[in-house]
Image (cartoon, rainbow, N blue to C red; front, side):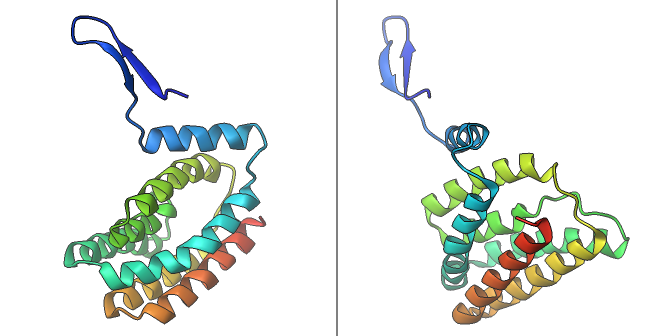
Length: 170
């Protein structure tokens, strides 16, 4: 698991390893491969945490966060307008929301989930209609965050996640 590192030499010794996104995502990946965490478990977790995460983002977001979210949404919307599947993963926008919370645990977990889902999304096929629905939800969520509409943003996030889960048949 890489909890310690050993460095040889005069300034060497045994040290606690730096833990980060890769460590967390590797642990989650292993648990998924071993059948300890299912796709359904991931979606249940997301449904339980992301609506409140969106509320925190609405409270704490900065102009920079808003600009980042707008850019992610714009890339998706331009691709859809050109009738192409967006090259960004669905989770990019959700990771931007996590960053806007300013909570390192939200950021770490969403980045780890993002890596896992990027791997898993290769198994799923999103139609252009699916991408259009996702883009509309992201736009609504973004507008709520920008207006700091704390109640509405959580409700829309919940509906969005349930919609995507249904489309993926999870």
